[in-house]
Length: 347
Image (cartoon, rainbow, N blue to C red; front, side):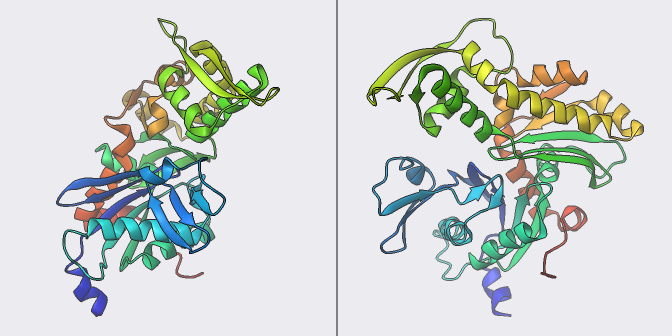
C-alpha cells in the first residue's frame, strides 16, 4: 500500500544496464542518464566516492584504499552490492528535482539473452534493493527491436544483432518472441583486449583498456579503408619499464581484432543457418539490423553483409536503441506483458 502511494510521486524508468554504460529513460524527459557502468568505492569507509563518468576517469589511477569497480561482467551482475549502489544513485539522481523522499518507481530493464535464473534474480534483486516497487525484465534484442520500431508482434521475421560491451546478442524475432537466438561473451571489451594483447606481443608495450578503446574508435575497422589511418600510442615498455611511444596503423588494429570479428560473423551465419526457411526469406528481404556500440566499428556492417549475403543496416543512434525500447514499453502495458520474460520469484 505504502509502495503504491510513494509510486504516485515517482517517475517510472526504463533502464539499459550494460557492461560498459548504463542508460536511464523517463517518459517526460527521454534519456536523462548515459553514464559508464563504473563505481569508485573507498575500501576503508565503504563509501561511494563517484559513479559513472567521474568514476571511469579513476580507472587504473586509484590509490590502494580506493577501488574503481565495473560491477557488470559480460552483461550480468558480478558485484551485487556495488550494482545496487550504482542503481540507487541513478534512481535518486532522476528524482532529485522532484523532492521525492523515498522513490518507488516501476522499472523496465534490459537483460542479455541466455541469462541464467540466478543471474536474472540478481538483476531483479539489485533493482528492487535500489528502490524499485516493480521490475519488468525484457531481453535486450527485443527491447532494441522495439526501440528501432520494428514490427515485433507480426509474423514476418526481423533479425537484430546487439553488439554491446560484454555480450553480442543475435536474435530472430517474430510474433512477440525470439524464435532463434545466440548469445556470445564476445563484444566491444573483447576487441579492446585483442588490441592490448596485440600491442604487447608485437611491440612489447603495455597499454590500458581506456587507451585500447580510444584506438578502436579512432582507427579501428573491420574492413579495408579507402585511406590509411594511424595514431600515436603511448605505453610502458615491458623490457625497459620506461614510457614509450609508437605509431600504429588501422591495418595492424584490423589484424588484432580479426579473430573476434570473425567469430561474431560466424555466429550470425550459424543463426541464419538454423532459422526456419520461411523466416529466412523475411530476413533476406528486410535485412539484419545492428544495434549497440560495437555496431559503430567502421565497415562491420559491410563485412557481415558480404559474409551472410543479406542486407545489413545500422540502426539510427544504435547506442540508445535498448533504452528507447524500454521507454516505449513503459507507456504500453499491453505490449510489455507480451514481451517481458517471467520473473525469477520461484528461486
